[in-house]
Length: 291
Ligand SMILES: N[C@@H](CCC(=O)N[C@@H](CS)C(=O)NCC(=O)O)C(=O)O
Image (cartoon, rainbow, N blue to C red; front, top):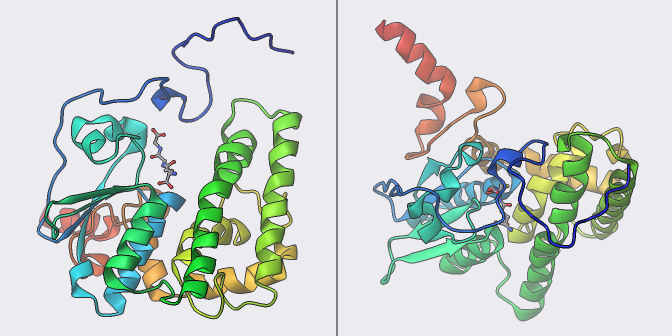
């Protein structure tokens, strides 16, 4: 059926599909609530989506490198329940999207939003996981910004119409599958003669790109591995698997996670020991013991 747009678009409460209930045509807070604050210099408000996981992976990598000031409290923002529209969250990110970070070690206290901005901010704060020379740094930022511009075609385009839209329509699925495969080929060609995305070293470019394209290549996104023939991108496969094995990546994926195996879900992270003591599995076992 062909749709004829009216002269002026109007908002009809729900237009169907997953996430329809949280979509609104206006910005700003819907309710008054402060954000919780923990003890560490960095306060993260997030959820383990690909955009959220970028930041927890970087923080876990920084801690693994020995930067104690990268200690953080990670608070859960349940976007399907509208937590991103609280007044406290909107103060930190007027765009109402996770991830959002507050650095309380600076004067004034700094708010940082947009995952690319957060990755750059943390890499610069610790002078780590970003090349220090101009040529290397520019190449790293080329790919960091490539991810920011490209992933909406994968997530908001392909993923939305292939997995979340109320019906399957050929036109948008074709359009965005084509673009997603082109992007996978861009990465595959880059990784044919470079170990990592920005060159020889692991950087924030890899940390930005892997949660979207690495996990797509590993068959973890939208159940679309076969449809997109991800196995055929052999250089991308090599890189995706190598990053997947990093301990900091495995920890970062668990933080603020609310789906999958209970043993892989750490809803809030406040201490390094939480990975072994506070998973949803452990909490359930402790509760059962105390009954
Ligand atoms: N460009 C943003 C995108 C962030 C984003 O889209 N976050 C999603 C989850 S992955 C979100 O918070 N959605 C909630 C909403 O749209 O209300 C970034 O990279 O930080």
